[in-house]
Length: 160
Image 1: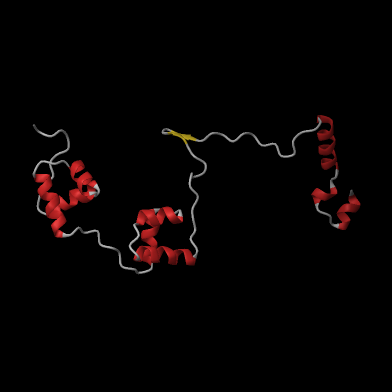
Image 2 (image 1 turned 45 degrees about the vertical axis):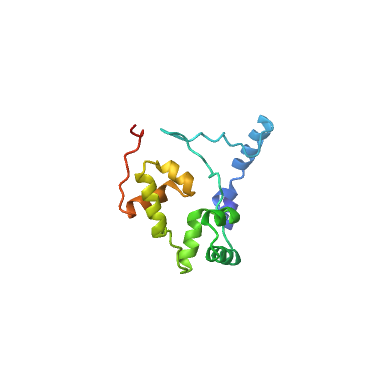
């Protein structure tokens, strides 16, 4: 032991009895798994169990794919269709388009359509009936009524 210190060996290397004791005790206990880890604890919150991984992985688009997204948007393809084709969110399509400096399509309805929506609504049809008849979304129909100078009735049953 004194010779080991003269050579300048590190203290953990010079005391071999600890490693030897560990090896003997493991051999006497028998076989066990090399990497034993306890089961992962279930993480939870007041709202319920917390998810470890998101259900959808993040999709990274290459430069050519981004160019295809821009070309599809410029051609007039609906954003929802572009997003499903490339496996990305609709918001990602908007980020790609605005990031490239491409002009964003206008969502304004023509004045004639807005006036038609307002006229139908004032005649007594509901938003659901108007959207079904004209093939537009409820939010767009509501916006068209307001922008044409109409007022939206409170939600609920129609008065008889």
